[in-house]
Amino acid sequence: MQALLERSVASWYPGATGVGGAVRLSGGASQETWSFDILHPNGPIGAILRRAPQGVGAAPGRAAGLDTEAVLMRSAHAAGVPSPSVLRVLQPEDGLGTGFIMARVEGETIPRKILRDAPFAAVRPHLARQIGGILAAIHGMPLAQLPVLRPMTPAKEIAELDRDYRSSDLPRPVFELALRWLRDHDPGPAARATLVHGDFRHGNFIIGSDGIRAVLDWELAHSGDPMEDLGWVCVNSWRFGEIDKPVGGFGTREELFAGYAAAGGQLDAKRVTFWEVMGTLRWGVMCCGMMQRFRAGPEHEIERGMIGRRASETEIDLLRLLAPRRT
Amino acid sequence: MQDEPKPEELVRAVADFLRHELAPVVSGHAAFRLRVSINALDLVTRQLQLTDASDRAEAARLSPLVGAEGSLGERNRRFAERIASGAVGLNTPGVAEHLWQTTLEKLAVDQPNYASYRREIETE
Image (cartoon, rainbow over all chains, first blue to last red; front, side, top):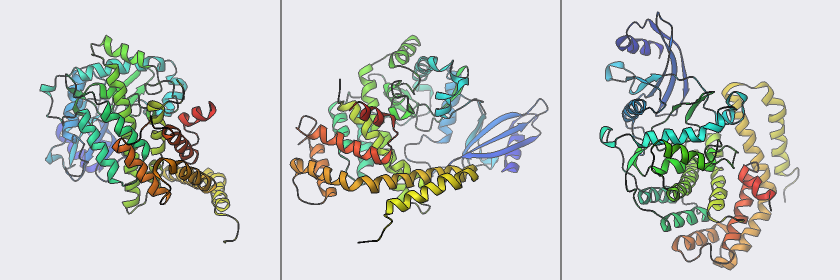
C-alpha cells in the first residue's frame, strides 16, 4: 500500500518526497479508508484515502459513488460548508482503484466523547445552531452545478423502506404502524428540491473545541426535500443518550431552526417531524438488514447480530413519536 | 427434563469470566469484539430469564385482536397484516397498550439501558 501511495502522490503533489504512516482505519469488503502522511520538505501533510479497490460495482444501490462524493465535497467546500479539501480524485494511472484523497482534518468523531468530554463542554451549546447554518449552506448549493443525483420523494422513500422491511419476512407490528402513519401523512414532493446530504448526523461530524470542522460521508447524497436532513439529525438514535436534546444530543430544535433560518434556509417544521419519523424507521430497517447479513454472511460477525437486536430501540422511539403515553 | 445448572446460570458464569478475567488482559480490536460478545451473552441471559413470561403475556394480549389460533409468530403476522391493511390502528381498543407493552418487554431484553426505555419505565 505504501508503495502504491508513494507512486500516486509523486505524480500529482509537487515536492512530495514520499509517504509515511499508512494505516487502514475502517471499511468493509467494498470500501476502505486509509490515513497517511504526505512527506514534504515543508513538513508532513495529513491525508485520508477513501477507495473501492476493485473499482465500481461493489457499492450498495443507494450510494452516490466515490467520484460523485468527491465532487460534492469540493462543491461543499467552495460553498462554505466545513469540509475536508479534496486533494486528488483517483485516476486509473494511480493504480488505487476508484475513490479520492482528501486532507486529514484533526478532531473527534466519536459521539460519546463529544457529548461527555471536557474539551467540548464550551462548544456543545452552540452546535445545534451551527448545524442549522451548515444545513442551510448545503441546501443552498445550486443543483444545476452538481452531478446528476438520485431524485427522492417521500413516497419513494416509503416504498424503499417497505420493500427492505418486507424482504426480511419477520413481521414487526410497530414498523407496520409507522409505514401506515407515513403513508397517511405523506406531504408530497418538496416544492423546491435541493441537494440533500442524506446521512447528516452526529457521528459524521469532525468536531473540535471550536465547533464542527468537517461534515463527512456524502455517500447517500441525493436530491429531494431539504427537510429530510433536519429530520434525520434529530432522530433519537443520534442523540446517544441525551434524549432531551433532539439535535444530536447537543441542543433544541428551536436552535437548529434559528440557525437554519438565519443562514437563509426555508423551514417547514411539519415536514421535519415527518422526516424524523421516517428516519427513525429507516435506522430500524437498517438494523434488521444487519441481522440478515449476520445470518447470511459466512463470518457470522457478532457486531452485526447485535446491531440487529437494536431495531427494538427504534420501535420504542417510534411509539414515543406516534403514540406517546403522556402529553 | 434436563439437569441443572440452568442455561441462564451457565451463560451468566461464562459472561462473568470473560468480563472479569479476560477483558482486563485483552486489547485492540479483540477487546472491542470481546465487549460485544459479553453484551451478547448478557442479552441471552436476560432473554432466557424473561421470555417465557413475556411470550405468554403477548400471546394472551393478541388473542382478542387477531384470534387465539396458531403460534405467537403466526398471531404476530396476522396482527401486522391487519395494521398494514388499516383494519386495526391506534384507535382500536387495546392496540396502543399492546404495542407499548410488547416493545417494553423487548427492550428489557435487548437494551435495558437505552435512555428512552429508562425514561418510560421510570415514569410508569
